[in-house]
Length: 554
Ligand code: NOJ
Image 1 (cartoon, rainbow, N blue to C red):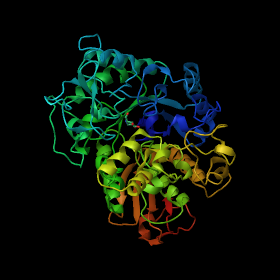
Image 2 (cartoon, rainbow, N blue to C red; image 1 turned 45 degrees about the horizontal axis):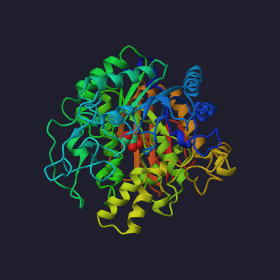
Image 3 (cartoon, helix red, strand yellow; image 1 turned 45 degrees about the vertical axis):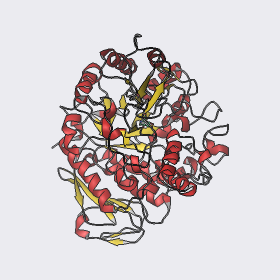
Image 4 (cartoon, rainbow, N blue to C red; image 1 turned 90 degrees about the horizontal axis):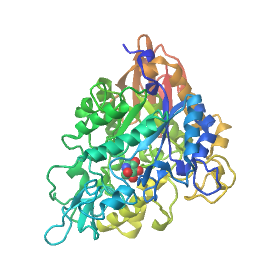
């Protein structure tokens, strides 16, 4: 039996993802700042947060909002200075809130000094730092791979007379991990940040770093004649050797954690990726996200799903991580539409839906990763035209949807539903102008309902999602079974209720979450001998849940 004492600090805390551009602006510029995160440490602490994953804030041309890094050793001036970053790391540490840096190591920005050099010729010092290939005989791209953002994954470079590979946007050339100098440069960067005292790293797009030995065309899966780069390159044999080297040179001997973003790793391979013999401490895998959204490449085709599909995906991840490693539980991040829209097929108030998801997230086994705004019950934003979106992927997706034969309206509707910008609108702090996010006009609009959906209003409302998240966060941190207990699914076949129990010794906690907007009856024996610890709508009784109500018994 594991007790909380056997767990590492990052296994018994709550993690929170900050998208700094949209968190809090202290510079009256319309975009968030590093000092803005420091200013809101109290807010994060009130949510029980001990680890703050900050999406990339390094120097960047911001084609992909920082996931195109030009200089890993500098803070982008739009976010502030290195001194402000050091201050954030230090002030956070003093309070037991550790910063987690996002390492973007599959690719750099085309503005990175390494790439600027690499593109010049085939024999310069950095010539072999990226993935360069000759054109096919007819001058076309080396393979028919489609980048994750849409369009060919190859870009022609006139200067060098070759194509370079970009798994994401063409401004994000892929690094060549085969080259030991590249690996050394990347591990040096990670050590530079680790030495500053951060609590860990989230490693971006890590399953793409190893390319296949032979580059060849694949069968087209869309009207564009292209084949997903993901299918051609994700999780190639040999990738783990690089990652073991990464672990040995960066992670070993430090009290930090590494969480990999790992699209393409199957549950059966988890033991090689996480845990004592693995390379990471935790792995973000996306099987549950794929249930309502489909696979990323064909995202605009309709998906039909039932609650049991979601439950099966979550249960599989829980079971796999019970045996190996540790689960990072999440329903949102900066790449996903809002969870209140994603995970419900019924009508009903967003606040109630957010509380249902919060109950699941904060009582699951693993470390919950909250994403800014999730605790307020955001829905998706309102978009009037494709021109309103900032996200590079959304624009590419719009073009892809059109190439699939969708009308302008249907393509816009698909982007409105799925765009990553839904997660990136500013955090709404109060009812003042610009929702208290900034004294200047924000880079993306605040929600229409910001006057009521904001931190200040929810702090004053006992039934709000924010106070529900705070209450369950405190409950989690004070309840050994929620930190260290086993996980077992209940009511597996129910299409309305997601339910599970957590057990540690004599302590048993049961979560029941009604994803439907109808009242539901269940076998009250499931909670016999337990007391109601929290009920999101105040309707529940033993054996009965209100519409869109979640309860925790223990
Ligand atoms: C995954 C990140 O989460 C996403 O925002 C980014 O666009 C891609 N990786 C490319 O770095």
